[in-house]
Image 1: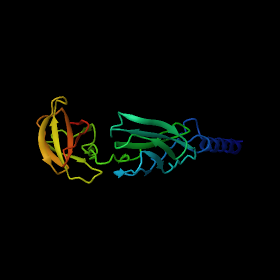
Image 2: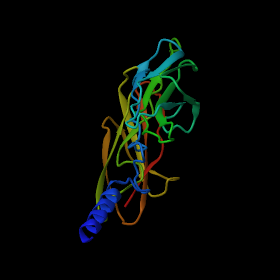
Image 3: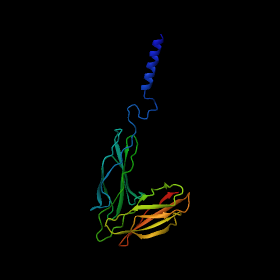
Length: 234
C-alpha cells in the first residue's frame, strides 16, 4: 500500500513539473511577443541629392522571431525631429512612391509593428535633398545630435561635458558652426562661433540643473540652418 502511494505522489509531481502554468510568458505555442528588428533604409540614402522630386522610398524587411507578420510606418518630415511631417503612413509593403517639393531637404525613417502590436525601434534617419532648383544653393542639413544624448542624466559632480554633433551639406560646401548654451532655453548664450569643429567642451557650474544647447550650421555662401534645442541634466 505504501509503495502504491509513493508511485501516485511521484506521478503527480511529474505532471505538475511538466505543465506550462498560466504565468508562462511564452504561451502554449512557445512563442513570445518578440520585438521586430529595425528596418534598414535603402533609398533615398544618407545625404543624397536626388534627380527628381518623385521618389520611390525603399527599405529592407524587418525580421520577427515569433514568426508573425509585420507592417511598416513610414515617416517623412522637413525637420530631423519629425515635428513637421509630410508623410505619416502605415504600409504593408517595402516601398512607397511619394511626390515632394523640389529643392528641399527632407528626413525619413521607418519602424515595424508585428500583428501582435509589438513595435521595433526606428530605423536610422536618412536626410536627402529633392531635385535641385537650377542656380540655387542648398541649405545645409540641420545638425544632428551625438552626445550627450537627449535628456541624459550626467553623474553628480560632473564639471565639464563635451558637446558633439554632426553636420552635412549636399553641395559639399565647407561648414562652420555657432554653439549656444545655457540653463534658460529661451535665452541661450553664444559660447563659440564660426568653428569648423563638431565638438565643444563647456563648463557646468551647478548640480541639479538642466542645461540646454543648440547649433547653427552655416555654409560659405551665407546660408544657415538652426538646429533644435537639445538638453541634458546634471
